Image (cartoon, rainbow, N blue to C red; front, top):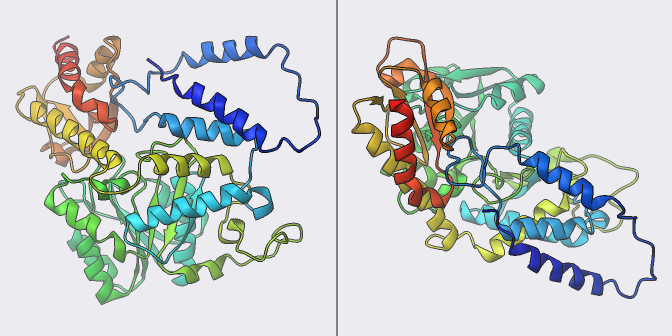
Length: 431
């Protein structure tokens, strides 16, 4: 069922916010005639979606915002702050700075430059833009299993781009990378900590060792996996990679994935605050209300929703980013769910499993039969999975690519639903 208790807290908060502006003279509010009917129609239309909020939705990277994030976001829209310049979002700008500083501290950075963005794509664009300015004309490289956004962004920025081969577990192949960087024309290596398709974690310690020899920048795309730095049940290789994020040059993380936020909330961080000088620009109509730094002065985006910062700040106020805390325990539960589902698949003769989950994403293929048919049969039974095309070598197949099934178990509740998920998957496969 949809959570509704936060509506009571939101109603009280709206009245409290109104009291803080009680000294203002009365002004007419917009007419609300007909609104009830329209909102009812909206609810009816939204019911056409898959049930992303429910544990039986175990397909794509879709996770409901925390109730406190929804309520805080909605409350902020009564003011509708813009976090570009201080006079457009005084309180929400301060909340963004505090929230971003907490994310940076989670990675071990006390000094940093960073801000929220509209999502991981824009955050990665800013990181690669900075890399291109600091290493002009040099190539951006990322693994063949990295997100397609890096190649697209490099094209937008007119930077040369190349893919590095991946190993049998979907991680960047270090032999292939060293052969490429030895040529001396690589400006930035993108290390993905949590690939979109399989949740694979690139071997960051080895990438950093190559940086010491060849002098390229290291950008960590942790849009999906970044928060797993707090989890206490990572494998040894993954743990080693996350522990070295502190040594990267830039980091991207998406609070609108595992950070329990509504969509439209990414974050980019730079280890060296001097990167801010690269953003320097002039505006004849902004930045005059304060001599303090305006977030628009260190962002490529102009207007940005202050509501995103307010929601993120409120969520971390309730669920601090600390190891062993409630938030971290939720991540560990998601990983246990993935390991549990993988174990059942690996012991079933009907399925091929390429490797154990490194985070909370499980992929598998059928030895015989159609993955698409199982996908459809599962959906008919209210279990919603995802499909993906992955290298046949992952599954010991000769085909270049295999259409397989994929499950992103990113809700902590998934751990308690594995029995039910397996029961439906078994029925769908037999069908």
